[in-house]
Image (cartoon, rainbow, N blue to C red; front, side, top):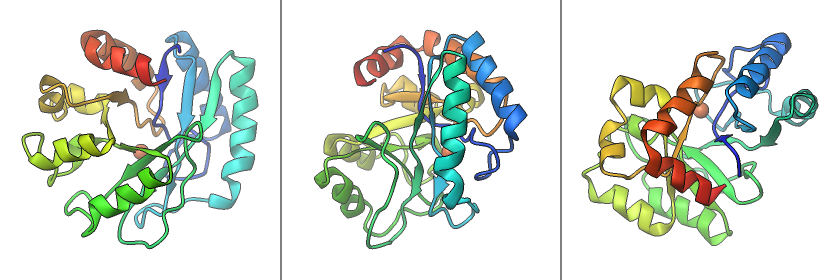
Length: 210
Ligand SMILES: [Fe+2]
């Protein structure tokens, strides 16, 4: 329970998040000021467009977890897995249960449902990151409903609510999760809290999930 941000790139100097260690601590303080008490660090993995220092994820996470704990925040480790046509899907599951996934924005992987099915058959719940970004996943399209029927959760970014891009998904009550996908923007924690207040059905779903 409590308030969660389940998609963030706050681990310093790990992927395309732009925080250093001091910036990370400052960001954690802002989350605390906003009343968010659980954050999941989800560095990109297998994303062909992002260089991630995979070998330093765990040690950097341990450092950040201690800093967060000192502020009364629980920091959890996950990843944002880029799914293409790779044979084996390796990810860091959130709470040993949820796997945050992303795809090419322009085209779905040719075996999209089979790839997601692999995760589900292994006992994981896929969370489709920033669902509003994919041009091939229109909210009116049957595929969205198929993915939800399979057991996938749909996550929207708070900035996309502000820009309007995520509104069709919210108005159709398709989203299960709102998150910041924070790469170092100090405005986003408060925006997450305010957006959740505006969309109570998402807040309720998140309380049920986390
Ligand atoms: Fe992300």
